[in-house]
Image (cartoon, rainbow over all chains, first blue to last red; front, side):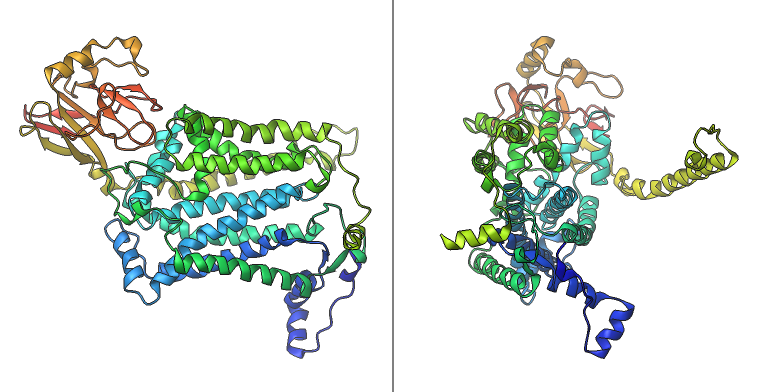
Length: 411
Length: 188
């Protein structure tokens, strides 16, 4: 891309030089995280990739510690979690970090996804980078769902029952698939065991896909708020110290808010019913998933047909995979797309409305509202984006990133 | 397959080498599938889980109009001792009014083909997304059709456990059961 990639680094430390000659990890770090030319105009939305990475590491660290005290058995799981909270030294802290960490990981990732959509980061040549991101999102959802089952409370059990039953909507083989997922005839001990095994495995799969995501990112470099490519050294700064510092600042601010929840409202984003031990014979009156699944849960319930609801819910994520080809506009950043800019904000409102629909019982006006919001969600991706790219007249793009930045400064 | 190595204009007859490539590849594929099978089948219910698949219940203490819930295969099973009115109501429903048409008689027949309309035995799991419907306990809401009501997504079942209203696609499932005597029923 830019010129600062040219000369290989020279290491003064003999040990470092010896290792690097055989395994070039130091050259790699130097090239990808130090001199790496990065657009000079990032705003704070560009912090959330780094923030999400920090949350992933934090979830793995707290999760490994929790696993040393957790027992994946239907008779002992609930009590072992209570023991972590009450008896294990600092167990309460580690568990609250992990519980709220899941929520804050999703907050970071949802903002990161919004950033990608608003500034058109998914457009050529970054389509695979985007698709890898959607894969990470799916893996996170699976991991979070199975993690929520582990405390074996009422919401754990019935959440697992409802979600695994989604697969029974598949014609012919559905019931067999559900029995296979359960390892029995209902959600029971075999289910809890395998969910624990997978909940421990999947985060490391996420790490691997994140590595691919970063490799793909470093081929063409980051997008930026103008959406235009850097044209030379005047448009970029080295990643370190400029963005290591900016990311570091963003991470600290984010962790402050997170710590506020961990220490002062650890159960705010949870559900009280999950402190009742699981009972396979009594369904709670109102089953809701964790907040980060609510928009998708609303789409599931908006369709008055079992198979249709399941297809719509999975379809809501499937459209994200083909987003780079649905959006026909060649202008990346919404800054220069006067109509798309507003529809993007309408989509955000729509997803929040879906979230509220998912949190409320499917009665009264919530039913038509969730149907309307579901319709709009698919309208945005399948109709609006392809058409808008053809009819919208974008604003004139600045000649370069440096021009855009310096002009702004002059005003 | 090997067409790229054949000069332009040449006729690409499959060679002995092509055949060996395809045969080896196919064998490797079969081998991979055969190796994957134990890993996939390993997740199916184990022998001890399958062994828990019958339960015996003495129905003598259940009075007319009462219902009990027993656990079978980790799921609730409803056993309802129906009143004559409930039986009459269930039998009177025309098939055209049912989303999943089944006669009441077919739902109260045991595996020995003996019909006992007073005993309705069903898996107490809503066919929508697996919640346990209400209606077994005296104070429970029984829904618009006097049978069961699922609080999760609002499905209503009639006195034969057939779906009448709401998102559930099927009637409550009747498991295989056999009355070994008039008072003892084996489920599964």
